[in-house]
Image 1 (cartoon, rainbow, N blue to C red):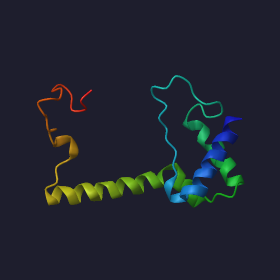
Image 2: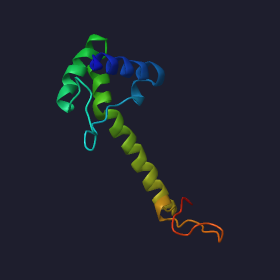
Image 3: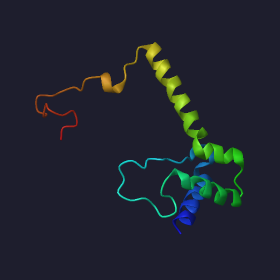
Image 4: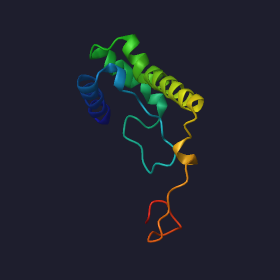
Length: 110
C-alpha cells in the first residue's frame, strides 16, 4: 500500500520538477518507524521495478538512485572551490555581529 503511495509521490515530483530534480534518501538512522514496504534500502529494487512499469527508463532510475545527488554535489564543490579562490569565507567561519541589546550566548538570539 505505501509503495503505491510513494510511487505516486515520486511520479508527481518528476512531473512537476523534472527527472533531474528528484532523488531518494536513505536516512534510516534515528527514525522511530519505517514505512510499510520500504523498511530499508533492500526495498528499492521493488520500487524501481514499479517505476519501470510506469515507463521510467534505466537512465532515469539511475538519476533517482543517486546520479542526481552526485551531480549536485559536484556543482556544490565547484562553487566551494570558486569561493575559496576568491577569498570568500564559509558562512560558519564568519562570527555573528553581537549587538549590546542581544543575548550573547547564541547567534540566533533565542
